[in-house]
Length: 501
Ligand code: ADP
Image 1 (spheres, rainbow, N blue to C red):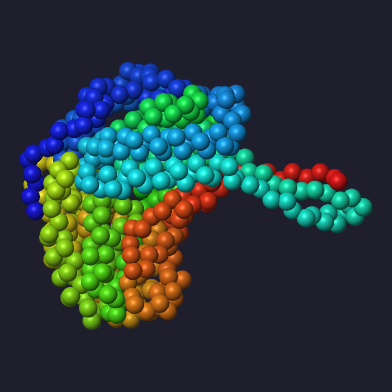
Image 2 (cartoon, protein in one colour):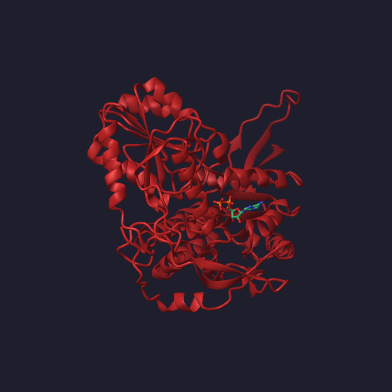
């Protein structure tokens, strides 16, 4: 491991984009905040300011909501055919793909993740999501319903349903996959015909704002997508509470999810939430350990553990516990830490000083309570927000590291003796986002998959995502599903129409 000092040259468009103060997108125009305030966004590997970004607060959100409402009611958007909407979304996907390197660099610069990951995962997945959702624009159907109406025996009725856009949508996204989360949110909203006010995370506003430029270049009518960067407690809270927003879609912590819900209560806007997790990843003694060990390491260390579905509780059959823990620990120790822009880097810094303190706080609390780090356990270096990939053993139920979402590269490895024990331990959490099962026995896999209370269960794999596969949480991991056709349902209302024949 080692934090390389060298930083690669940025491609020219990134250097240009990142060197200027950046405005917000309201009603098709790039404008400074009404107050003139800006906030800095940082390079987490050097702690240096990349650039200043317009800081939206309630007044800016009000303007953005007005623009979105106008575009929803009077603009060309509601008159466009589904085919035209679909083609615009597809065009946007093509444009993002044409700017793949630029988006990858911007994401890496702002978030810290390895450039190899931004290139291979974040940007292509965003492209794919928009293409998938472009296809939905022309396939949002209702149905015809044979009704009997017992109190009108002599009349026959035709009843059918149509799906209509829910209206003006507020979307609040996190920093861990900034561009991709913008795609998860915007794709289905646009395919459904909604208009949007998007608030990116204050830690990583750059890719969303660059996306805004492409959205306007692609030809989306003004006001269809408005992007207001700013802090959660001000811009985010104003959007969630806004009386003229019909729906709020949020991805982030369970704690903030609760605040969103309260704020949404004023006008009873629709709410969808994709929240935290403490996902169990379960290895059986019969698993192919050659696959399961690197799989378990990837489950927690991918994106530095900054994934809501990270496999942060690793349950291992006691007969293979030592072997698996040694394997995962060796994997952790081999991970090359460095600035995201270095193509040799396998793990970059955490996103912010706040996250660094939070994760290091969990490490201290775990170690003080008797856990042992068989790999990692500390901050790495003294510049940048790097944390060593960490494998903890000797944790116990009730310890914070075993119960709470750390959102960093820290896994608790826990031995178990039988299926009953592990099934109940896996479900012993307030969360229910994802789980992993590693076994060669299909019966074990299916039985356990059906017992685990989580929105996604991966068997002999982990972190497999697809635009067509729904993702979301049971219990306190959220409401609703992102991606797949479920996402379209979250952005449409169903109307029943009935007439005598
Ligand atoms: P994390 O803890 O991982 O930073 P958060 O849940 O705090 O995640 O943030 C996710 C998103 O929610 C960000 O865009 C953030 O600005 C926003 N946010 C934070 N607090 C609030 C709030 N009180 N109301 C609305 N949005 C918020």
